Image (cartoon, rainbow, N blue to C red; front, side):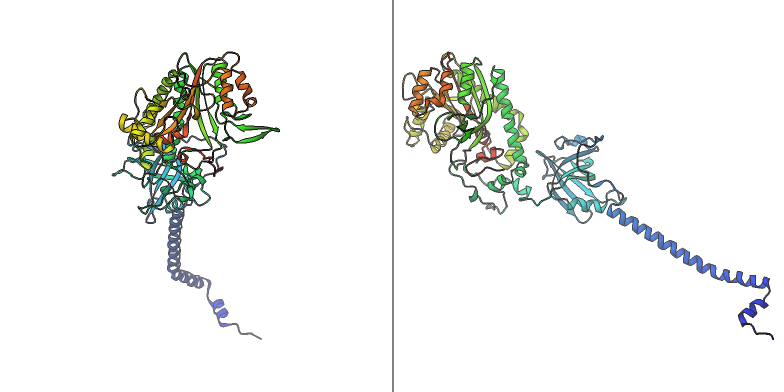
Length: 558
């Protein structure tokens, strides 16, 4: 029996092999254009996707190493990078590539593809300009990264120096800017700022008084001009940030220079620097204004000055001319604009041959050397201070104006002020006298001698002609005392007599008195308050602006 096959199979079997081959070839020829068209579309789609992917990667900064967070600096390696100080960026460097490091003070976006940044290091700042480029070397992702960094983060900025068409008013380096090619973060600011640096750098809205009581909680942050300014309490609470402002950077660089000038002058005049203890038995000058403490079961206190030890070294130990710089402690509950519980004392003591005028002449030369040195060596710093805290240049004579205490009192009475020759000057009267002296003698700096004995320390030498007076003196800047000194008593019996008059226990100063029993040279000296010198030279209204970390009756931190 013969079975019937399916038509297709039967037809295929019936076709000859050559004919079947031709049919297949014809079918392929019909399919090729469609395949080529599909392949072409596929390739075009893949190329389009590749270009879009590359564009997105460029925008995202994929594969770029010219921005981002740097690894933590742990002294792991030394590279060939060279950093340029911002203060050295000048138009003469135009066209050169530089790398700078500093705090990111501000960032200001221009659309979505550009940004202006201000980078600050110590006193100096420079503007960086960065715009996304078509070649992708500077990506939009880099712009976004720069805009996203927190203010005051530490950054490395690299780019080419250019000269702007107009000065950059927001930067100290006004005649240059950096065309940024790379931007990396060295250390991120991890918490919100308690205040904006622009507010902390804003110029004073008016002249604040520099005398009288002080309450940090009464300060107003918003002034008549409507602009926000950072109050003194906030500044002191976050002192590490406040110290970053150009004005504060300048104040304390000037303070450092005063220390250098002080040493420079005295060393050249044959003085020896000493270092005396700050833990002592009893009080260094008598009185109750001392910080007491337990010293292994015995009562002790923090030194109010190096007075007793500098006398020992100069007059009793053969050094003859000595000086010291160091902390001074006063337990005075004084909430004023010119008092601190801890300040920096610049003290000196020297032997004399016949008269304490020898000491006064040296002090005059010392202060003129310091004032001249500040004006000559701190020009940039003075301008940075003046930008935020305007002040008039200090006027001083050569040699320094000298008045007697009685002459100063007479000037006050002539001006209608009630002042007795044997009463101590009040702060208000000191300030008034400073104004009178400036008007009459055209100087902000002077000294007076022959103070009443009753208002001077126990070791002060009495005046040989008037027992109510003393061989003592004070120096003033702008009507405020910055130095107190005197010829000291070098005879032990007279020291004990004066100590008893002050109610000082002789046992507490026995070693001091005994040091004069083996022959002591006549001598004199004085103590300078460094912060007060800086405050008054720069015309600052508050001594806290001249103290690194304030210690007053209400502040023990930071």
